[in-house]
Amino acid sequence: MELLERSRRLRSVPPLRELVRETRCSKSSLVYPLFVKEGRNLKEEIPSMRGQYRYSPDRLLFELEQLSNAGIGSVLLFGIPKQKDACASGAYAQDGVIQTALQLAKKEFPNLYYITDVCLCEYTSHGHCGILSGQTVDNDSTLPVLAKTALSHVQAGAHMVAPSDMMDGHVSALRRELDKHGYTNTPIMSYAVKYASAFYGPFREAAGSAPAFGDRKTYQMDYHNRKEALKKAQQDISQGADIIMVKPAMSYLDIVRETAGECRVPVAAYSVSGEYAMIETAASAGLVDREAIICETAVSIYRAGANILISYHAKELAKFMDEGRIG
Ligand code: PBG
Image 1 (tube, rainbow, N blue to C red):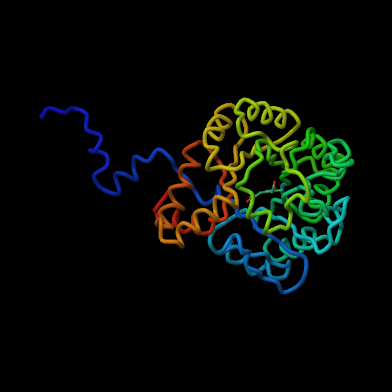
Image 2 (tube, rainbow, N blue to C red; image 1 turned 180 degrees about the horizontal axis):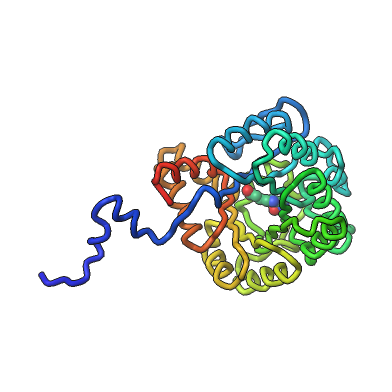
């Protein structure tokens, strides 16, 4: 049969398939999220996210060593304080959990790159991402608290801050505060495109941060919207965001693609707790091939255009990249 075009020609053997891959990913683009819990000598498995743990600052160091050996260069830290209150005072306390962890970690592993999540929900007694006025999350009175929190992280050693609160004007509030204190070169990675998503369920159990009433729909984005994502990304860039994040990843690959195409800054995608939990649960039920699914979902996020992947599977992905299974 005369068939001039044969797609199978380029699929015949592994080295050729690898040669013609259109998507390349590397370990240097991975970020591993970590939960740091106030206390000592703690390493608690998170029931909703088997294989992920809450570490006290002293125990975090062991995990950082493993990450560093695995070739992971960057971590994203979330804090879980002992006490929560209405004004989230644990978020910016000098001896807060993140601040303490950063001081220890920077001393032991100065070559890792430390990014911190800046939000109030882990620190408020009501679980909302901002300060309340009655039953409403008050945008403008939340901004100075976020700014103070970001500054305290940077003063404790954070290399980059990542505001995930979804308040309007948060990036400029942080940028101004950091600049005022001389941190003009500290980048901001904005969770600009963050949808109100059920995929955060396991995280909220991990961090004890589920809202005590209502939901996050008055500040996080409605998942019916696509243009709004671009508008929000542009807004944050004009306020000084250096990196734009899209979150979640798996059900939002169209948004990753479009944001990557439209924005002239690096785009990060966060494969969130629910994505992790679904893969782990389906794999442990014997329904899918765990490693294959981890590889396939990660590559799909890069293929959509992400430059940076934040993933609870980062350690394993680093191994798969080393082995040439993906990348
Ligand atoms: C804090 C925050 C959340 C996540 C990242 N930062 C939870 C939320 O918005 O409720 C979710 C991460 C994950 O699910 O892995 N606002």
